[in-house]
Image (cartoon, rainbow, N blue to C red; front, side, top):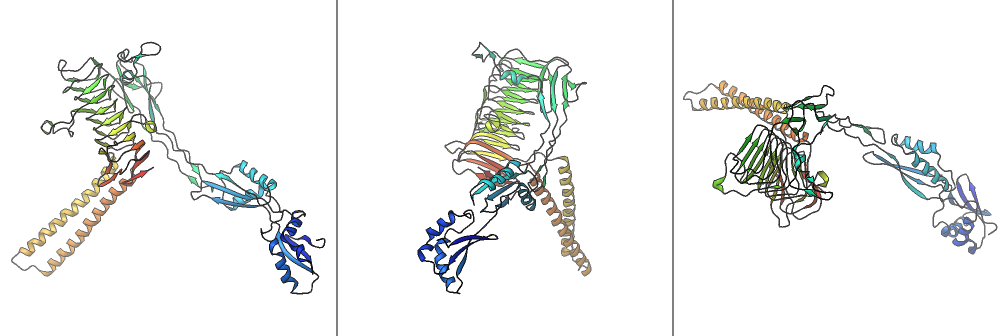
Length: 556
């Protein structure tokens, strides 16, 4: 053993064995012990290198008469660094292997690796430091993985939004007065909320610009700016002379808020609406502190706010509709159906703004700016281009939609869709109203198509007349007519293709519409868009049904 030596030649570990060394001195355990006690114990060697030394020694000894047999058994390896950039270029991961007797990594070496991999942005200084430390202190060959660079996602701007500065009738209705320290009186809704001239009513919160992001390779990622929207004075309000983003009242009355506008309205306050009061048709807002009886009609140019129930009645408001305790209707017999109203339900609520109800059963709810049902929607017809929230706002929505027909053009949030019994519950995706620019482009192409179709029909009629003529037409006349007809038919196909392409592009430009089901979706729930239909075949947990680019898809 004294004559068996390990030495380093440049970066290669050499084992020197004298000729005629006994076999027991070349056993794997003996050689491994020699290696581990040497100054070269940190060099890299293959796991089974010592087991093959005797075999290699025997072969080399037979080749020549050298007094010493030399075998390569290992090497010095510097620290190794491998970088992996994700497919989306938003992350770079580093894998570092501690050196085998070689040099560790220096900070500048790590940075050079990053530059060579085109990783220039989002570099984490602490990760670089951790890599250098690992390469200096870890056991030979020890591996360490760390996120070394992270891109920045773009932050889209927020749209302009509008903050009411005073409460309205809906706020009063949904916030009963305290009876004592621990109880509220559901019958005491407090004094009527009014504003005086000069009262600030609505504040415009301007949109914000998007903040661009970047990949770890330095590529910018564009962000969307928020959408701007002007504040709009309504009846009884004006823009504040001190702040162009604030509406103030210029008369006294009841405050009303509709999207980007505020109004000050006259108010009619009633108890119950029954056959004794007759139908209500009021130029202003109506507050009903009781119920609306079956068969009654309430119409207002402002808000309609009801503290009790609506039972098989009809409401129509140019403002918001609020029903604190719920809406109850029934299915009408076929002979009772009013052909002017596209529904077969006896309770009908129509709002040019929003509808808020505690719950609704066998009722038709139509609102231009959205619907909020506090608990449950059962066998109802709901139609709105705005957002729909059932049982809470957004991700917190835990209410139920069971049965009926719901037609939406914006996001819907609900806890439960359908019922365990498999009740058919239909949701229709509807396209939002087209912009003036889209309508003009569509009309232009449609006009071109109509012109070509008319020309085609004239040529077909002329050809028919020639065939039916008793006189033989001139050959060149028939040829010219056929040529012109062929060109016109090509023009018709091209115009139709352009119109179809416009409609297809409009679908791709539409923002996705999502139905967020936060708890459970039961079989029997159906989602439709034109001729496309998606069915829930078996009960499933939280999921999202999305309409995107004209296709209905399920997101778990």
